[in-house]
Image 1 (cartoon, rainbow, N blue to C red):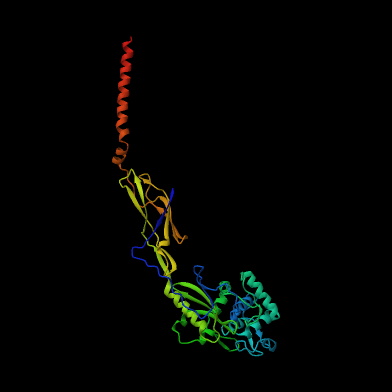
Image 2 (image 1 turned 180 degrees about the vertical axis):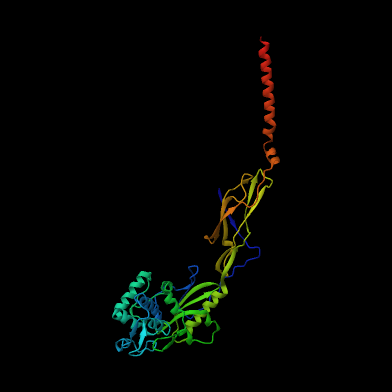
Length: 398
């Protein structure tokens, strides 16, 4: 057995060009490939910052895990609405409105209603501070090490912060809940009280790429600036995108940043063919057969989702198996394995089988062992002559 390393090159020339990432209004951002569990883009991703209404992602998933019956009807009271600050975004709930818990979840995410988030907190935990403690307990469970919550709404307050990296982790966790995913990707919903709520993303117009945003949650405060989280798809891959810190005086900055990054991913990332099917892996010598060597080819087409500046020189194949064959190796027998790597990451492997019959070549064997073929009869003849003379000499003694 042996291990052999091969570097694979494309037949056509390949030119590596550095990607020209878009300039953002935002000061922090990240694009995360859900399909391959990989970060595609990061900008100050670990830097703590105010996150405005992106907080309501945590508020909503915390509430969902406490709700036993989504269809249970609850009543909006004056005590609930009195907790909502004058400058908070609201869904438009009124005193004595009868709505379901599911209604409040939609009203929390789509129009970013602080009236809905505070209602969830009070109805489920008795008061807002208790509910916030439960939010922080959940964030510890998820592993959001650079996050802390002080309220349910995301309005600016000391000690309330997160990072784009942690928000991506939060979205990963929340999307495991199918109800949350459905709410997050809804653009319009009618509550039980007849109130219709719309996703905040529907406020933006005039860009053809807006339909690429499948789901979103926006946020804005003077300290946080314009923020956004987005779920989208690109070339068959599911993606999360988060940006923070776009200028507060530019109402479209967060959305424009999101669309720039989405267009950038669309234009520069796709599944690249790194090893084509039937690519030669290795030539193996064959002894005592009618062929001197056989070529081993890949049975797989190996692809990887990569940017347009990927380096084909980082592709290699490692063959582990027999280093020599002979007629004794039977057709369809396993002779080794091939492992495919990109940038030292294993991206595929396959068993290698002998695909052709290796027939014995008697002439080659004869040439190889001609000394023995000639020598053995001579030795036998000499032995017989010696034996005969020895026998004659014995009888002559008598």
